[in-house]
Length: 219
Ligand SMILES: [Zn+2]
Image (cartoon, rainbow, N blue to C red; front, side, top):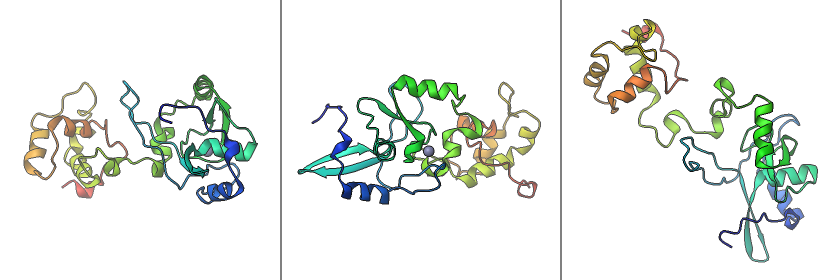
């Protein structure tokens, strides 16, 4: 029923469901994350927030002609530990939304989930941030739905702006050399980006994972 958010009791699972469930999980070592290979819930922008929240792994079960859509990590917790999270969340201790290793989960409230994250100092940043750690589970760069540019153009922009970047003129608060961005636009009309976007690439605020191209390309 629409709007009925009561969690489905996981006791509805039967042996054949459980067998099918594990065919959808890439089971690895006991300490590793076990990525989900099946469908996902759609991702979304939480209300008022600017970040994209990835969809959880989704497991469908048909029982008595009714289709149930379960969160796969809840099922994983249940199958591995025997605990049905019920009204609680199944919290990932590994921060990987598609992980289905039941040992990486614990039943808890939303607050527990946040506390766990904070206590481990794992409000992920830098190379630990989700999009870097779980590259295959999160589209980024040109694979991202919003991408207007590709790896090659970013590399090209960086190579043209190399001197300015090296001189620190692309740092926040510093002025890029006058005419640099317009000249990139003029000489490479195929790069269909606004000046602000190009400036953000030069300032390395976006596309940070694209390395500075080798000198030989700069000419
Ligand atoms: Zn995990």
